[in-house]
Image 1 (spheres, helix red, strand yellow):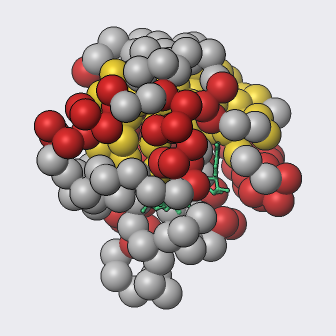
Image 2: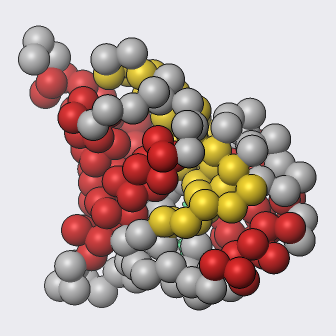
Amino acid sequence: MKITIGDTVLELVQGDITQQNVEAIVNAANSSLAGGGGVDGAIHRAGGPQIMTECRAIGGCPTGEARITSGGNLKARHVIHAVGPIYNNGVSGEAQLLANAYRNSLKVAVENGVRSIAFPSLSTGAYRYPVRDAAGIALQTVAAFLKDEPHELQLVRFVLFDGKTFGTYGTILRAFESQTAGE
Ligand code: AR6
C-alpha cells in the first residue's frame, strides 16, 4: 500500500529491512548502540563488523534521538540508528519519545542527503510498544515531517516483518488517508 505526500511516496511493505534497496535503513537500536536481537541483530549480521566499529566510536544515543553510520555490506549506504522508548504503560512520555525517534531519523537522513529511507516498526518488538498506537505515531510523524519540513526525500518505506504488524499499519494508513482526503 502507498500514498503520496507532496512529491514523496510513503509505502508499506512486508519483509526484511536488511534486504531493502534504499539509501538508508533505520535500525531499532538501544541507547548504548551495543547491538542486540530483532532488527538490530539482523542489521549487524547482514552489514558486517564495520557498523559496530562505527557505533562504538559514537558511544551511544539517548532515547528519541538517532545517529548515522555507514551501511557496511548492506545495499543501503547508511544505517540510521534510532532509539525508541521501552513501553511502560504509556505513562513515561513514550509517545513523545517515539515520535522524536522517527522525526530525528528523518532529520539525520535529510542532513546526509538521503532520498530514500526504510523504517522498521520502532519499539514494537522487545520494547513492547502496542503496535496500533505505535503505528499511528509512526505514520502521523512521518507524514507531518514530509508536509512541514524541507527535504529531498522521494521514498519513505515502512518494512514490517510479520503479517499482523503489516496489517495494523495498513489499517491505520487507510484511516489516515480517508481523514486527510481532500485536504
Ligand atoms: N526487518 C524488519 N523488521 C524486523 C526484522 C527485520 N529483519 N526483524 C524484526 N523485525 P525489535 P524494539 C520487527 O525488537 O522493540 C534489540 O535487542 C519486529 O518483528 O527489533 O525497538 C535492540 O538492541 C518488530 O515488529 O525493536 C534493542 O535493545 C519490530 O521489528 C531492542 O531490541 C521491532 O522489534 C529494541 O526493541
